[in-house]
Image 1 (cartoon, rainbow, N blue to C red):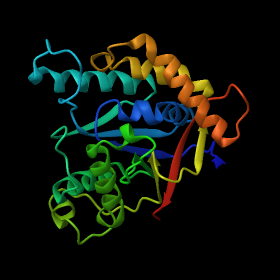
Image 2: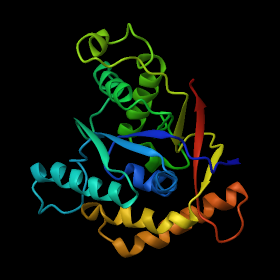
Image 3: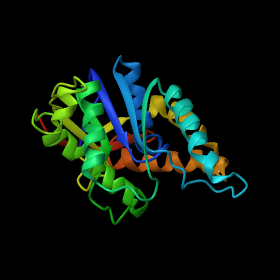
Length: 240
C-alpha cells in the first residue's frame, strides 16, 4: 500500500448516513483540511432509521442527526454540507440519486471524490450496509459518466447552469483492494471528537475510543507503518 500524505485541493465526500465519514475517514479529512483542502460533505440520507433510544420520536431523529453531523464536520474543519434527504434504509442507486449527486459534483467541482465502496466486504459486513453499497454505486456513476457528460441530465446545464465537471479520481472507503493509506495518528483525537458528536448513535461512548484506536492500529500495521501509528485506508479509482 502507498502511504499518501498529499493534500488535494478540494474533496467532495459522498456518504449514505450521518457518521459514515467519521467512522471511515474523519482522521484523513482532518489532515486534508489542516493542509488547506476545501472539503464538502454530501450526506444522502438523514439517518432517521438509526439510533438506539426509543424515547426519541422518529420524526425528530433526522433533524437531530443533521445537527450531529454538522457538529462532527466542524470538528474536522468541514463547514459545507449538503443533505439530500433520501430515505434511510431504502436508498437505491436510482437515476434520481445519480442526478442529485451529479448536481453536487458540478456545483462543488472537486479534485477528488471520497465515497463508499459499491462492493460488499464480507470481512467487514457492517461497512456494507445496503445504503452504503447503493450510494457508492450512484456516486461512481455520477463521477463517470454523468457529471462530465453535457448530454446527461441536460436540465442541470440548461436550467440550473451547472456545467459538466470531470473528477480525476475517487477514493473508496472499505473497498475490496485498499491501496492508499493515510497516517492519522496526529488527527486521531479530532476523529474521536467528530464521532462523539453523534450522541444518538452511541449507547456506550466510553467504548468507542479503544475500539477505534485498535482499528486504526490494525490498518497501520497492515500498511507497514511503525508500531503505535494509526491509519485509515482507501482504494483509489482513477477516473480522470
